[in-house]
Structure formats: structure tokens, C-alpha cells
Image 1 (cartoon, rainbow, N blue to C red):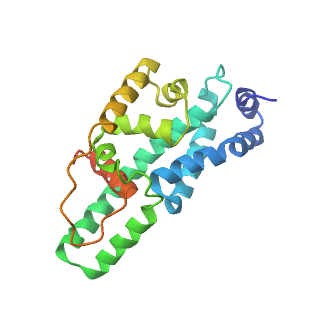
Image 2: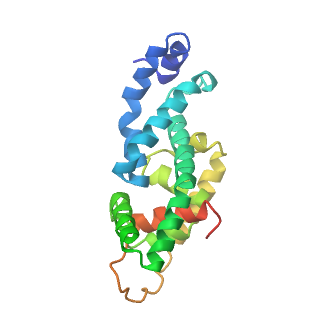
Image 3: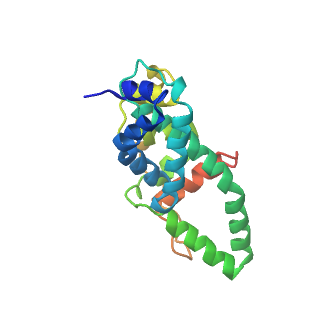
Length: 208
């Protein structure tokens, strides 16, 4: 079976061969991105990821036989850009939400609904949302991207020892006793994934 590095090497002179990289890894990259931002927002990010990969293929490390960690690293960067682009929109929505603008409240509800890909992390969301952005990237690549320690290190361009220490710290934080239950809210609570994604958006701008 042909390795990814062979395909990418050939694609430098025969661009159409890069389609094989897309076909091999589109499912894994889409699943990871969809869990981060929801299925409705994932298509554009996945497309940007593969376009960026195609443009950067000459810089690919040809000693690596699998391109998946490289693609996940690019997807992580595109996700960060996506969060920054959405920050102004979210701040405007929340300002209008606080002011009681009914049209904008509906818009906010629809935005939240689009982001709700799952609620599997309901019990853990306060502690995941409290993690640093760098720790969340490692956690999500490991838990949602199914990458190994070496693959996470390759995806983020950090030493494998850093991956190990971050995951060890994350495990300690997530296994700690749960915080006190919050006071009952007057409106329906957001799902866990929405809280985590909003925390990522806010921390990207220094609000957390």
C-alpha cells in the first residue's frame, strides 16, 4: 500500500494525486472538526484545511508515512482562526441578548443550536471549559481526533514530553471532585459542548 508521503511527493509534480490524501483522511478530519464546532459549521473548516494542506504540501515532512497528524494540526489552526472570526459576532449577539432584543435572542438560540453536536460531556464541561486553550487542543486531538501521543506532538509541533505532561495534568483536573452544582437558571441551560466551544472563543480573545 502506498504511504501518504509517497502520494504527497508525487503530488508536487502531479497535483491531482493529492486527491488521494483527501479520500484517505476526509472522514477522520471531518469527524474531529464536527465535534469541535458542530456539523453545520464543519464543511467550510474542513475545506479550508485541505486547501491549506494542498498549498503547503511542498513543506510536508517526507519522513512521515501518515499525513493525518499534519492534517489535524492544520485543522486545529483553522479552527483557531474560525474562533477569532466568530468572536465579534458572538459578542454582538450576547450584548443584544442582555438588552432583550428578541430578534437577536432568536439568532443566538439558532447559533447555539447549530453548535450543539453532542451532550456527552455534560458532567465534565465546567472543568474542560476551565482548561487552558493549549490543554484543550491536546485533549481534543487525543479524545476526539484519536491521535497517539507522537501524532499529537507532530500535529501541534511540540515535544512528546509536553504532550505527556499536559495530558497528565488534564487527567488530574478532570478526575478531581466535581464543583458545586450551579444555581438553577431561569432559562434552559446550554449543552456541555456549547459551553466548551464558547469558552474556547472567549479564551482566544483573553476574556477568560
